[in-house]
Amino acid sequence: MRQQEVIQAVVEKVATTQTLWNFDEILSAVGKNMQTDLTMTDITRIAKNYISARNNVENMTVAGEGGKMDGIWYYNVSDAERQKLHDSLAKNLELK
Image 1: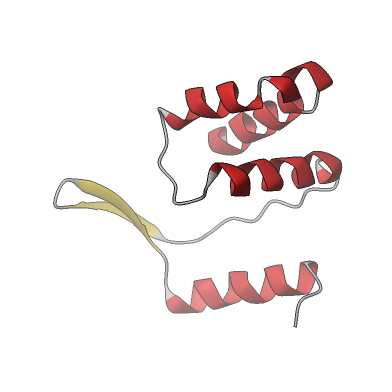
Image 2: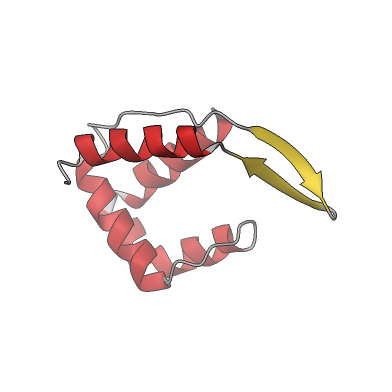
């Protein structure tokens, strides 16, 4: 829930014209606290697309179990749960 609140707050802040000019600076600050394999171009494209859709958001919860392995925290999701999420996203995004 907290992660969703943070993401929503960032999107609302990014939605302003003034903030769009500082977008790289914002992502750099957030990037110090997260790791992703998305490129800056990917993140920018997703954010710009999300801004227009931010008032039509459906939240989904991913069922799984968290735990540490070799000092790294993982969230393990079953194949059945991944398939359920895939099917739901494909349906909502009108993908085949």
